[in-house]
Length: 205
Image (tube, rainbow, N blue to C red; front, side):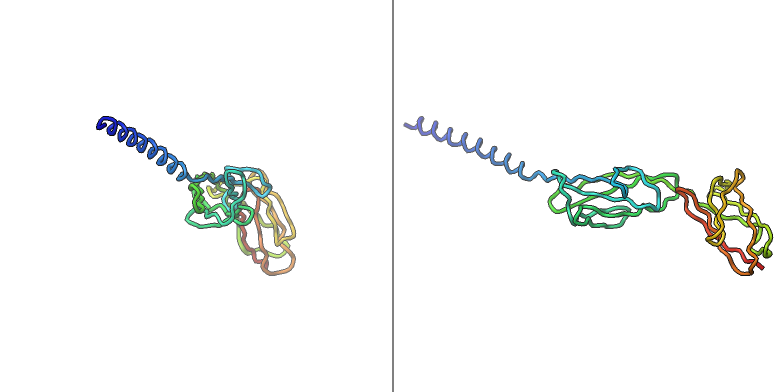
């Protein structure tokens, strides 16, 4: 009788151990967090991983079923953004001092696993305007030279005089203008694709 009781207790204990292990396994499974998806895209909806400094890009956050998530928290370049009802947030790429830099995008939302993505930012050419003099005589010729941030002359840059007359720099990075016949101050603007524009002012006397 004693041996039978011991056998019964043994099987009860064994069953309890097995059952307890299954229960713990189920609990650990329920603790698994859901996944977030991150996509970076341009204004046309095309997925991108590279953007120029100063340009904006869109971060889209969805769940595992590709449903947009509203109010997801985006941490980028020490700034906080929140997604809208489309699961999107508009971000402006920061200005950088080197040719290109990589930035991390971190997204969190409630009981979801925090997700990260990397975007690469490329710097634009910083234009500068060089004038022989900021004072020119009315109706006289004057030279404008356009350079980049390294002092190299830039070819093919649009140079506009007072938002009226536009020329393009030649192979020497130069354009020649004729000063207006009326005295006063006039603006000069230099611009090109993926460049940071430059402005200057001349005084016609």
